[in-house]
Image 1 (tube, rainbow, N blue to C red):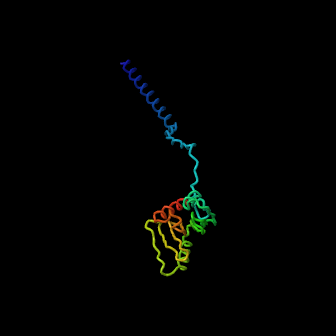
Image 2: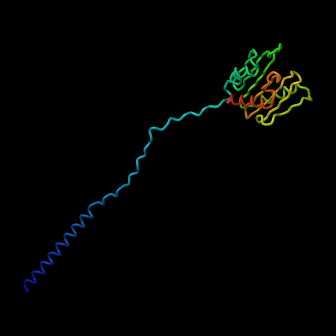
Image 3: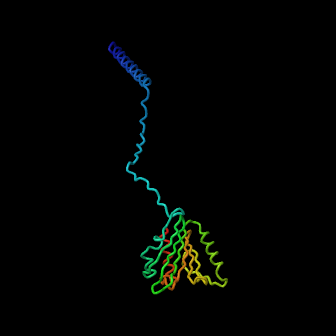
Length: 207
């Protein structure tokens, strides 16, 4: 009986110690602040250091550019047109427009001839249009004006009854050309295909 009483007291004492220990542990947990949640770091932004430097855009031909006659028709090409005849060039090259007049005596001839070229690249074809109307107003009213299929966006051609020269007006976009020449001497441009070829060459050289 006495041993049973002691055993009961020991069990009670152990239970009491366990309860006290749990209470102390709980109090410590309540007093300690919760650990901060782990933060997910954003990946660092990497800026490449080997980017190529920006290159300014190329500027196409504009109304402020000056294009010389020797660029429109190079000297060697001109010599081929007149079969090596001696010539002189009168040039008026201004921003947006170039006027060229070659004077030459054709092979086997005695009289001086003219080859006239006017090129416009000022983005304003109104001068080209006004020149055409003014020139036509000096011609007889029965003058025949034709066009060449596939030549530029707009073209007019005729044989002047005043000078006897072939006259060709061509517009391609904002670029314009005017030719005046003797087709019996400039044989390359004596046909429609030759006129188209020469006009396209000059348009390309104005870019």
